[in-house]
Image (cartoon, rainbow, N blue to C red):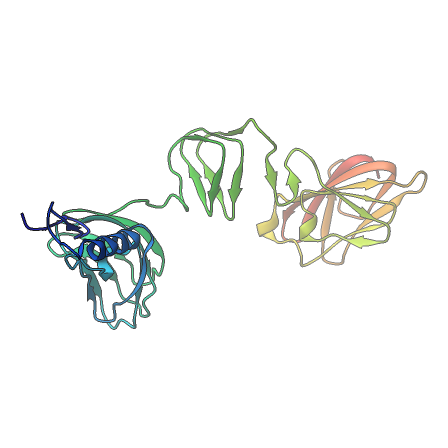
Length: 295
């Protein structure tokens, strides 16, 4: 009986009694093809599109696990594998040019990179069409999740999410609760239930970076002008006078407004020893102040 060929990787299937003196070479070629399918890498010039090959009993570019599509494309292009092949791929669109690239089967549909998308995709052929194996998990999670760790660039949550660790390089948007049971919730300023402390020993002018902190000082504080705008309304800073006996002044720069909550009057304030005051931005160059030991 003559040799046959496997359906997907086109391996040579040797029959009993065939290939006397050459079976070892055929076996070695089959092993190289398997190596391609498991971890092979190839760059494919796709400047005018490309058709990947699946030669019988031979190493071929379409059999690689990882493909990097290259070339300067002047229009939308297709990269095609034969129909009836089932296989997984990791494909990078490294082409140059603002045009789409579609990875597809010869008779079916495929997955398309948008004109500006030069990213990587995990794909598989089901024998008819090309499908995407993972979609958007790195950028958006839109259902309830219970897990030990999430690493994402953006996180969108539409149901309760219970995690022990979230590492996010951008935003978290939640329609319901985010609950953590195995650690602290931490943002760029630290654990969210702890107010970060900033120590000052000389006269100090407040900055936007002070928002959410308390300043421990024995020197005067200046509320600035042209730093806090309408967009910063709601930002707050607390001042603690750490001096054992002396008061400090909290004064506004020319052009800034500082209303005292107790009287509604605008003006500079004095914070006595061991007093605590909180300054809240309510608009462009406009603040209110409240606290104890304040006059």
